[in-house]
Length: 257
Image 1 (cartoon, one colour):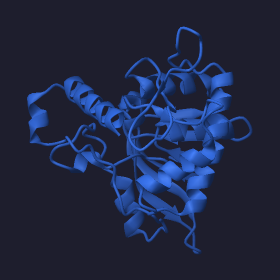
Image 2: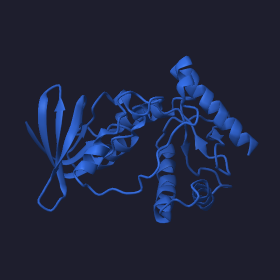
Image 3: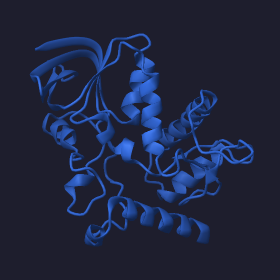
Image 4: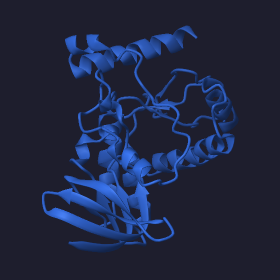
């Protein structure tokens, strides 16, 4: 089966849904995800969102904190774009009633974590930030955005110039061949490749290996985020107990800094 569209997005986390929300206002967009939307890394994310939202903080501080924490293993222009643009995007979300946690006064409840020098961590639903954000974005999607669940993208289609023009998928309806003017890969992490992991078993990063095999250009993939407490001992705890322990240790560490 062939499908021809303007934009194909692989993945169904926050990055994928935000792209679909914006691009779907003018273009025909379809999303392909190898499981259900509530099985993404984003949906399970308990941590908050770091963004400048109060007058005494500013993006220059946030940029400096980021560069210091990463010991300058960055493309500075990308850090600046992420934080400057991200601040504007989050502020717009707040104006559009993203249901974040708030103080009794109505001001955003801001946490202090890790290497941040100011309180700037937003949460939603306590430890359900990812779930709340995903549910919010799903309600915001234009009606012409189509989500195809339980389809695995297993091959990128390249033209003679090496540009990606689509993908092959395998799913409950057999094999599909998507052709798109633009292909966005927002397919999440690879944490489940590790023997001790807090990720869903489907988070195998298979599309990263597909890209590498097909010589698709990508960069700055030297690091992978990992919980320092994700060891075999995790098996003695429930998923929620383990995440709560990691969150407590992270906040305690920030309080002592």
